[in-house]
Image (tube, rainbow, N blue to C red):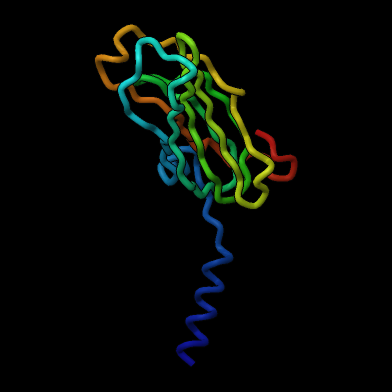
Amino acid sequence: MKLRNRVIAVLAGAVVVPAFTATTAQASYPTAYNIRTQKLSATPNTSMPEATVTRPIFLTDGCYDWELWYDGGTYNSRVIYLSYDQYTWLDYLIPENGHYDQRSILEPWSFPDDAFNPTGGDRIDSPPSASASATSWGSSLLWLYAGDSVHQSC
């Protein structure tokens, strides 16, 4: 009888859906970072290897602010709807002749061919002091709100 009461209590608790404000939701889903810190060349070229940061991340469905991150600041922000899924989160820094290209990609595990790329890549002109100090780069994700799951839009 105790087991039956526990099962009923668990089922009853699962039906309750609490109301969240944006502040509560953002506190529940803190900003996620996919960041790497390394020394960069002041004169990058195409013969140098690209750098990557890769990690799995589980995301709930909703609208996210996806930003590329470089040397302490964010740029190229995009609000994007992401479905409830586990993703492979990849960030690349690709040396070109005289500059770096940066890319961030989210690949959902359920549909690996449906990769999201917020910008198609961004050019980062190499700072003159890059070889003398470490530089942090990558991307961040901040859950904003639930969005429209039917149309998968924000």
